[in-house]
Length: 546
Image (cartoon, rainbow, N blue to C red):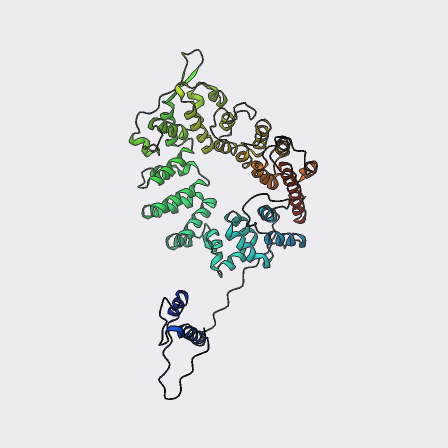
């Protein structure tokens, strides 16, 4: 195909045809001249060359036809960051962590090299705890990393400081930083600046209003509540829900009148949220109503040889129950009466059961037999109540002993519920309970429980996990099923445990019934674990930690 340019028009000849719109040329080039006739007189075999000539002319015209414009004003310099700079070794480590990217392979063995990107959250947490500022040259890469991983955003934005917001205003790809910052990065008024507060509340964007309400709630709860009440009746339902959710922080008895009024809201979601918040106030009128309803459904039958809990679930969901947040329609496959009972027990203050059930402690209440197969329903509702009300006493009773033969404990019915109950306990008690669970039941069911333990793991928990991994290794267990726990151990095990693991990095003798290649995998995994722990220790030292 010839691509020589068409001859220029000679003097006196007809003028060259006008150049077609650029979009039309692109369309013809994509479809091909055989499928779409190009603009201009050329056709047949000459059409491709004519199309290229026309595109070349139009390219020159597009470039030359730009009119000069006034130079835009230079952006204001970024705000100064007064925090100290990173030590040189820590800055080099950050560059290494940011340069590492997850592999594109489809799974399989990870090898013995640490996953550096999985260490970045911990490095950022340490750097923020030490109060260091991010090196300016790393800010674009940090923002790109946070753009791809939402879990990194809070730590990245804290570390990047005001310069991240400055950059985010110049690059649309980083606008998430403005959305995450209070008020979109704008300076919020102080609690005493009533005029500015009123103006921002009435005229600001939704994100700015949420940030304003959240900030005021932390500084002056009464001011925040009064501000919300001024426009409550005119807000959209979805906005009312978001605003109401901000009252969780610093929830107090003074919020009860506003929340009680919200029980009559037009939106079912708003009513449900108001009821949930009121049920978290043990002295509220709603909590008292729920306690009376739940108490009328559960009682101790003392006529039996062994005192037994008997349950009489509600026969209907009346208007008062619905107003107090009880959802009348049960989910598919769930009985209505058990559905209503669970909601009543969940919303009733746990402190009321001791008086209603003969002065018994939570452990004694949970240990009582329950008639007519209501035990799982009743205990599951108490589990949800303990989590909602953050009651460690009831959580301990429902969890039971970690070494009990029944791994689920006396009340919890799932791993997810056990994890939520553990979250209400202190860090040390939580770690001790999970260590006992791992020592008794192994690691097959412990992944969710390990995820709620404070990092780095306490020494008893770390030893229990390593011992359980060693037992699984010696037994020739299928090694890939423990990859999740291994990943957690790399991020959560105390780096001081690295010395105990050196003996496990050798390839063990494989039992006859072991999975093929299991010994090599275990050695590889322990090598990666020890390398990662020593790397975490070096990171801490580089940032000035012990």
